[in-house]
Image 1 (tube, helix red, strand yellow):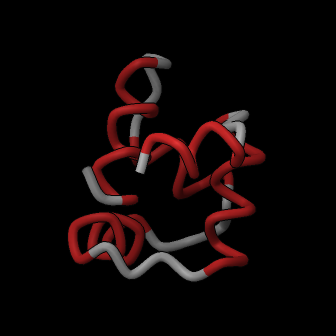
Image 2 (cartoon, helix red, strand yellow):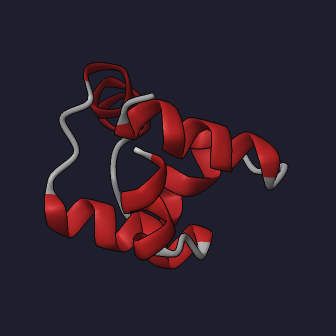
Length: 64
């Protein structure tokens, strides 16, 4: 599982949408989806996503 797949699964598990997450992190929806698909998320973007979705980065390191 790559980072984009992991984030997508967390979004689904939480019953949220990619539209909602993209709005919360102030990123264009298409850009957000492209970054998830291509697995090209930058560090600062990951921190914003983790904060919004309450992702434990230590757990993330172990699962990816």
